[in-house]
Image 1 (cartoon, rainbow, N blue to C red):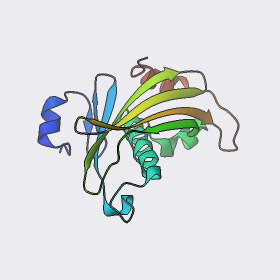
Image 2 (image 1 turned 90 degrees about the vertical axis):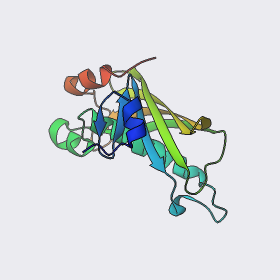
Image 3 (image 1 turned 45 degrees about the horizontal axis):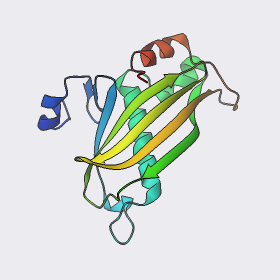
Image 4 (image 1 turned 90 degrees about the horizontal axis):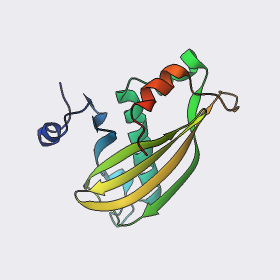
Length: 159
């Protein structure tokens, strides 16, 4: 069963999975709602929650294309970690808002990948997140991204 709301599903012909959002072209879209736990006493989303939303979207993008981070260590001896991240806040999000995190992979290198993520409320751009992800061994050393994973991710990289 498709968990994407009907109005979103009809306008997004790409990959779908319950709870994982959808892919349209080279962009992953994760709809989400702001809960009370995401906000401060004034009902404004706490700034660090935007990073949580972006992390959730990257995880769901990987899940949707068949890459389970929970299995990468067992199968490939590596995992993805955030190497660097910048965020520009444009407008606040509020309790009960419906948001979308739109993610694009922009670069795939031997041991890293880069993503641009934008958090939207309807047509309002709330925040821009740029993140560089490093492939690492569990003990903290850099690792090359395995060819099977590179092949899958490479199909979604757009500069």
